[in-house]
Length: 344
Ligand code: NAD
Ligand code: UD1
Image (cartoon, rainbow, N blue to C red; front, side):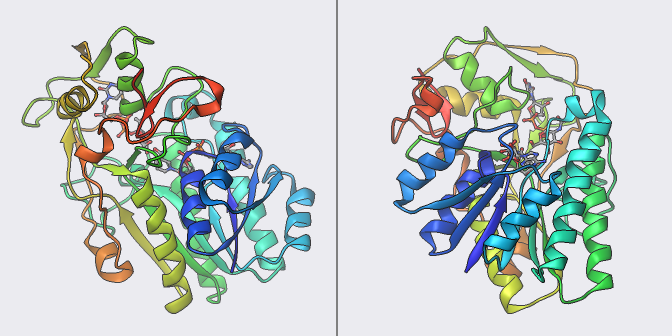
């Protein structure tokens, strides 16, 4: 089976390519490399010993995208491509809507014209906004607090409407909680270009002295230690969820929505402590004001995915931040990674 992976050179996409290739799928990747490098795909090929059919194409370039569909046989699309930085989306909303929403519209139009009707889409727990309670179930109300989140909600709505108009479409909307970690070999991982926004990449840069200390955003949340609680899901588990979703679309067509999370929440200070224990490095931190738009606690009820996909997260926090199992050099930076995070 041939799977088109949009955004396949990125963080979650590259890990999913590993799982797809290991499971015997043929993988075609379309990525404009705006937030990634072709090197990650080369490393996926090395890890798996298999080839990827890569096309450096922007989803907004209709002609080139159409050419990919003309020249390859595609049975399903896993759609990761998109811009994902919340703060940036507030500064440049039009670029976010254009890239994420228009890009998806063009992709769907081309899929329709080539009779490709299976899609797995990367949504986010951000669509739950401030949840009324935790754990969060798929039928909780949705809302958006910023243009990034709104683009995800818009795309979910577009895909739901597409299904209503043509129920031969099979669509899985996967709402990821907080993806972390990397392939155990350490040669691919999360590699933000600038100062990281997300917690674990930030902690890892503090661990190696690239950044002086972690600012903990808020110590006065109504949580046991006052810091924010999140559901950190290992990227390899997430990747496996996509394979399960593909199988589900084959066996039970329709439109489905699943939370991909562990069901377990950890506070910022618990993550710091776990990282210190695993890496043997001290993580200096100071508690500062809350970050605007953050919520106290967000974690999944992942039971629907367990029942309907037979998927659940296998890795625990201990394995997210374990000492090195392999040493990789990512993008030739000569930085040693531990499960995707720099430790020396
Ligand atoms: P990433 O930035 O590493 O990967 C996205 C990839 O898409 C990049 O390789 C980028 O170059 C590519 N891309 C962006 N716009 C494109 C376009 N117009 N045409 C072609 N390629 C384009 O991000 P990621 O963390 O791997 O996230 C993948 C998806 O999952 C995104 O849609 C993101 O919104 C969603 N998601 C991510 C997280 C997270 O924390 N990482 C959480 C929830 C949802
Ligand atoms: C962020 C995004 C969300 C996206 C998710 C996964 C925001 C407001 N939300 O969520 O849309 O789906 O990433 O990519 O950006 N923290 C610190 N110090 C730091 C960084 C983070 O204390 O330097 C805290 C945060 O306050 C939060 C937790 O760590 O409590 C996790 O933060 P982060 O990794 O940024 O993820 P989210 O805020 O959950």
